Length: 73
Image (cartoon, rainbow, N blue to C red; front, side):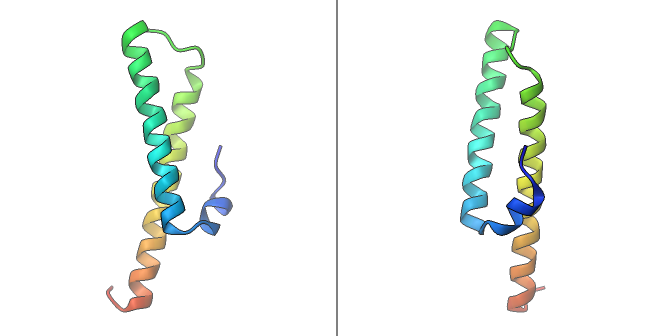
C-alpha cells in the first residue's frame, strides 16, 4: 500500500510512472480474471485500485500547486 507521505515526496514524472505501472497491473489482473474467472489474490485488485486513486490524487494536488505558483489559477 502506498502512503500519502511517500507520494508527496515524489515529483510529477515519478508519480506518472507509478500511475502507469499500477494501471498496467490492474489491466493484467482484470484480463486474467476475464479469462479464468479466478484470481489467486483478489484482494490485491482492490488495493491496487485504491493505490492508483491515491497516486491520481497526489498528481492533481501537485499540478494544482504548480499552477498556483505560476499564477495560472
